[in-house]
Image (cartoon, rainbow, N blue to C red; front, side, top):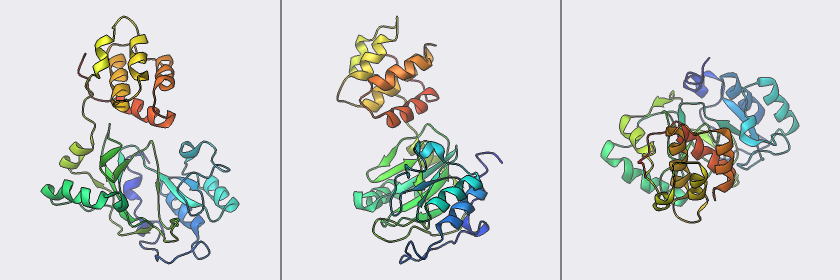
Length: 277
């Protein structure tokens, strides 16, 4: 089963995962292991999160999301060791989760953004324990990390909390339907995709003779740090000078944290053409 087909078949109605979990569920009444195994058995990559939380359980997965797996035996072992672990799922390649946080204004912003298109199209969706929404779509990258205020996009480079995990509030995440993951409509893909990088103002000082200038551009404080890194990677790729050594130098130079820098680099390596300085 390939990555693209796995999540489409992962509707909870066919896996034994309940379509809905009562909002008053507690750690003592929810068999999190059986749900984690159900996700793994349909090919979704699972990882244990802190009980009642959203971060990877470091004692079991010291490398975080990178240890997510659909190996049922490994998943079983994790939940034997910590039966109350929340469940994280790392989206497959070609899948993106629209993560709406109403507390950050996401619900209102998303309505305004999608109103001209009739709102989001039906797809596999869950309600978060914090009153938000996770809508799963099929879409290819490179994609933005944020769609609009209060609405993040979660890809293969990250993970999402899935039902029946428990929110810090004590409320459970719950599936709202058993609809298969739908292809994102063209208008939504256009909104989610990153625009071609434009050269930062400091790019005027870049000399095409070596990569030192690219490192200097990325290292500058302030401004659009993502755009500078994206632009530098694309210039190196298009000039035929991209290498593992340059990747390491740019990650070290960037003001972004290492995970965010890696994510930006990944998009940039396969991303659209930059506007040359």
